[in-house]
Length: 146
Image 1 (cartoon, rainbow, N blue to C red):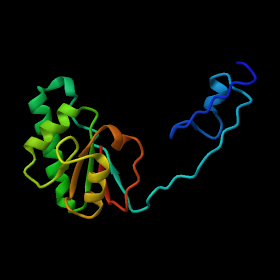
Image 2 (cartoon, rainbow, N blue to C red):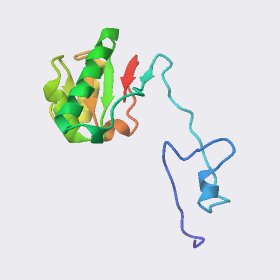
Image 3 (cartoon, rainbow, N blue to C red):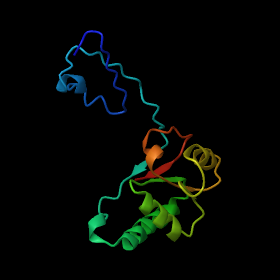
Image 4 (cartoon, helix red, strand yellow):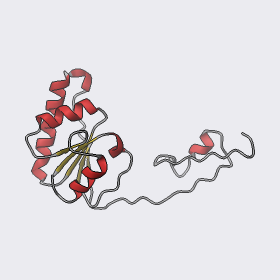
């Protein structure tokens, strides 16, 4: 790489471990790595369902019903839920099936507006994709579901 060329990598996942450097693995052995401490909220909890069916095993509607069922189960905690999706179609299908009041990206406003409304407690469920995976910082939220 030319001397006058600068490469700057910014990511939440550049650091693999204390012993392994991503820069070294990519051949940039002299590249400095600057780490910023996490703003992790101690009162948050991430819940992962480990026995959930594969998306390929169900029709899109049946899969959306399964996701909706899990959200209904998590409502018993009576805590705010941030539900993250990788599919806009699934997010919208779940939103259509949910009978609990909720906020849904693509339906109820821009991500920044939804974030503010959710933090104010306007709704206990927020369905998001895209920018919600990109590190938005929320005020204390007690339960997360992915």
